[in-house]
Length: 235
Image 1 (spheres, one colour):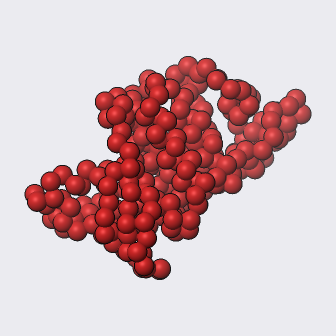
Image 2 (image 1 turned 90 degrees about the horizontal axis):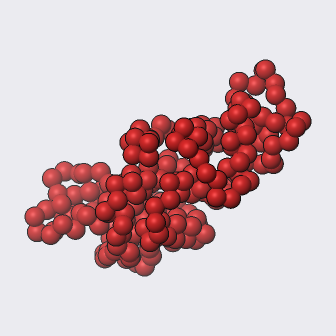
């Protein structure tokens, strides 16, 4: 079946001398894996650049249900990044976010709302001035699409956040997955205060809390290799 759709490149792996195996989140069929033959050859004239992580594409694919590898008839860039390519901070944030997305999205099913959220967010990120907390608010909003958004807010009686339960609760020494008072306050501020100002250490603390939370609630969520690079760039 021939399908016209849009796609966001998640990951590319070199295959043999001139080909790529590419994971792409498609608007019409969720996450799909493609075998792109000959795209790294001299005659391909740099077409492999279309399949860098984070690239936004228009696709015409030959789709076969339950097939391990799909194939492409046509592809072209939907949107060409400008500031992301010139700003090392933005490049690192994009690399980091795509790695997190790759850890979380495994469904081969249509999800137009999720696709629109990701693509619109990346385009807005490219078109606007660099926002040092963009990745935090992106990952927070992403939780809504995954169905794991934290519940409630901090109160005097429920002052500590439980990573496992996903909500604020009373302190319990038997719960090893509960945040400290200072961490809980910071986390609550991120959840409920707009335009939160964070210093370098607070930003690092919040991001570590967030990734730990993802680890609890997303099956097989692995360590993020680009995290150290991101932290060094945003230091």
